[in-house]
Length: 383
Image (cartoon, rainbow, N blue to C red; front, side, top):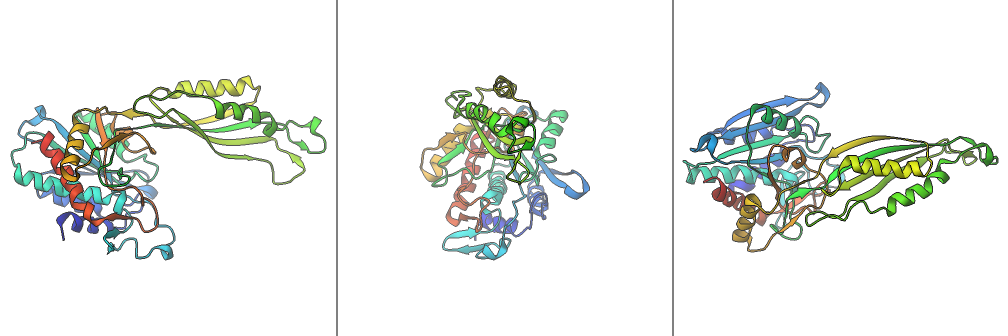
């Protein structure tokens, strides 16, 4: 069994449902300490939701003048769902038909193992490496993400710690290992809209004011609005309604309020304050009496096809012999926090097809090539 597969299985066996770490970071820290890393554990959050964060760093011979490459990721996993629907225990790593099964196999314990073993091999062959290698690992990515990467990035910024390149081990491959790298993510802006009406008996509509009827033209306008046209990196900004609720449950009452949840996934062509203003203007023009509670989940970020993306693409070509697509599709990630302290941030990992699903798995034959890609990237940028 390869060292990477062995470590992946050990990490999967740790029961680390968010925000629990389940011992993953102690395992990673001990491996890194053995090859000269300084490690620090930072616990944050309320007592009922404590988050564990690991910071590890090993400076190269160039000291502060050398480049800093950081591997980032998370040890927490989503809940298993109904255990009876799993073919095998989700925290007992199991190989069947060339696949490694277990919660976190794809998202993202295989990448974490690849980071560690790639670094071990790199340092063994390059003991006098010039650049600095760092790790930032959290147990609060699948949860609210209030006490994980975001506070660690703020901490690093206050300490004056520079980060030049960051590889996040999210599962990004689609059909085969290496076919897609995420070099950015769209922003996420959510809103809880409440449109006021006047409740009344449905037989006397002149005494009421139906917010469902009143809001319908405005909703249609919001759906048909072109918010931007996107750009070479991003799809156009999208507006989606996720929930509408009105009424008391009785069929003879005009509701007094309509509640609507919506979300923008927005590109760098739009700013959140512009989206807010345009949406509120549409509602005001329609004459609606409304309030909105806004939540900015994250701003968009983009890394061009620079040194980091170039090195990773070259490593993928060398290992699996395919050309890689740069993409910004998908949801948000901790890259939105890291991009504030690091100019070049990319995400790369195994196939994403089973992430968060029952019987989550990775292809066993992808485990070592993934590690090799991470090692090759280190050799290009840090040696």
